[in-house]
Image 1 (cartoon, one colour):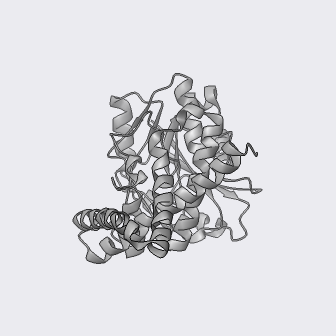
Image 2 (tube, helix red, strand yellow; image 1 turned 30 degrees about the vertical axis):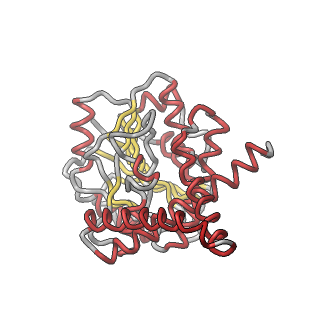
Image 3 (cartoon, one colour; image 1 turned 120 degrees about the vertical axis):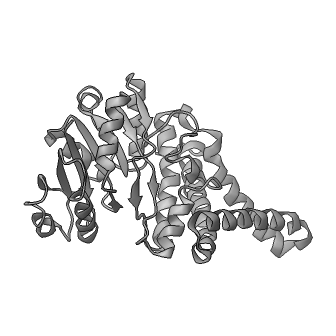
Length: 322
């Protein structure tokens, strides 16, 4: 099996350097790499050139269109039997491609997704963000989890599709705002089989600060409504949880200001939630510092997603604006 690894890139030369270094250490080397520079101001051409003698690598520069259409650009030029998509802020374990190859030979999948984890080199903030995006106490717990809700939708930081899927379904029709989920829904509807490869994890850096993380999760909340506009049945009860948390938190703040006695129970509930997050994060990460930071990251994960969800729900569903 020959893989085509497709990596869209926008103004992140240092990240692609670290990612390509991990690909050089793969135990299975039957693959090519396509780096699609999406109109970056700070391009990575010189960095990619360093890997010419280490990888079968191809560099392309195109006008900025967003990550979805940049992946399509890579699909059109890929030679592989299977296309693998990574985000540029991922580090790839040395046995990743071997795990995927062995799994695909044993279990016929037309498309797959894999989980993410925190690398030992990540900062405490990055580890806390990683926890928030994979914790059972936040909506991140459904990502890369065998016990997912409804159909499994691979996420584009760690996703693969067969050449047959590309030829019959095409590529992304959205370039942002939930483009990976929309794509996987169309793959499902076309009769192809999608599954999770539990051992095919990547180390996903995500954002390096809580402010960046807030902006990203606010965008994710808006993306869920964008997916709903294309596929109404894909809006599940669990997707409303961050919005409910956000409304509940704001009401609790107001009650604490206007009538503290009524806020007592709400305060207790919040304390219990944050305590559960702290002790679970401590048991997972083995770090008190990361556990404390995980409370902040989990709060941001829920609140930012909830705010983005509410914003576009009101705008696009209630008010029927485009």
